[in-house]
Picture 1 (cartoon, rainbow, N blue to C red):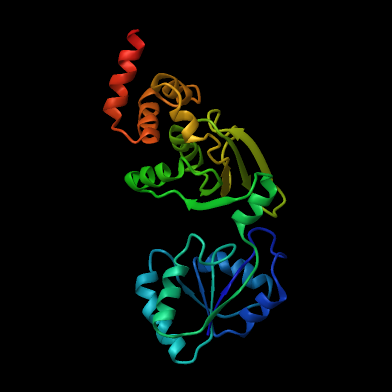
Picture 2: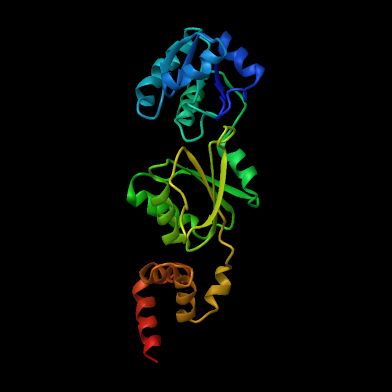
Length: 269
């Protein structure tokens, strides 16, 4: 049997009796970073064999995990913090477990994005996105699909990426209300509100949950405007002229060079 066990996202006391009991009774614990996990496990006097299982080695390790389970071992999988299978390779492991008819379950607990959303005060419904892709093309394609989403958007962002992530999202979304939550359940827990146009107002420290208001503008309403007014609507949100042209073209379902020519002609009048 394999158990996906949620671990604290900050305060080590934020775990359940069942989680501790399950970890104490298993044979092996799979974890992202053995050093990080030992802090939590030592706090509760849990001494088990630890095996690394993360996004860089899961393809190699998954067959070994399957073999251990088939041999009768009881395993637990934990992430560095929070609930497994969110922004880590847990879903790929579940696919392999199902293919091999192996049992698994979850021991629920803390989840960073859900707690951050609750603290933000932003409205439901929400869309959880996670970390933006490192690949620039993949990142542009993903964000383009999200620009018309009316739901609150939730991202994860590392401190060294936060400022650039916000700038990048602003170029596509325009100016929107945003909120960051960091150091959840820790002594220096912090919630910061700002607009995408202004950017994050502090020096980034720690891991962030970034929450952004959804698209509140009705595309039908925008398409009822003249092409020039439609274009200027986006420019007034702080979007560059080139990106504004792309957004008008996207809204209207036409090629951007057509929109560009129309705007040039209208500005001549």
